[in-house]
Length: 173
Image (cartoon, rainbow, N blue to C red; front, side, top):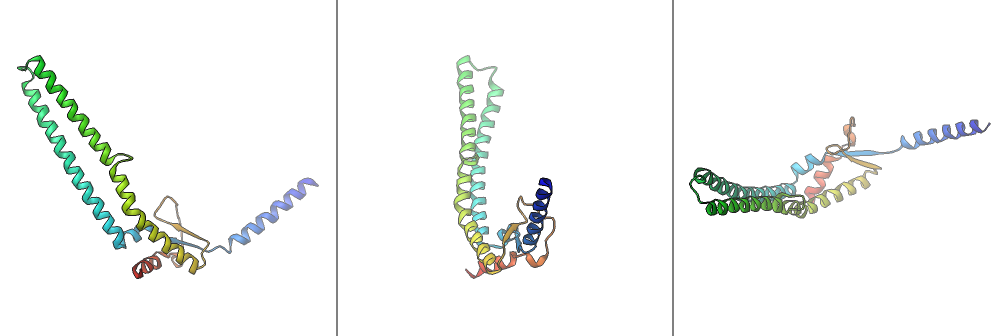
């Protein structure tokens, strides 16, 4: 008798869950499309690309200087005094450390690139999020998924794609 009650409860829970699920409205966006078509995002990407190029050029110069110094060392190490050789090796190690420190400072996990990316992209992301939220409320959507992210969206009807509405709303602002 007890198992019958549990079975009946499970049945009603399943029925009510399915009926409430059928009433959900779900929309989705493609954030890559939004980012590709939003001028603010393109400007932020261009600024980041310019910084990366500038920093990469500086890193390339440092690496080229190290390489030239190393090649010179390799050519002359047999005719150098022990003191000169030791000084040159120390200088090469210092240059390697400088290169490594520069790379970490600019491109590391807490580097300037990460911070700059956050500074430039956060306002754009907030603007997009607010537009999505406004449209979700206007359309009375229960959920909005991003099909270009980690959420795997295997199928969706085009009528629930609000990407273009988000783009239109962002263009009006």
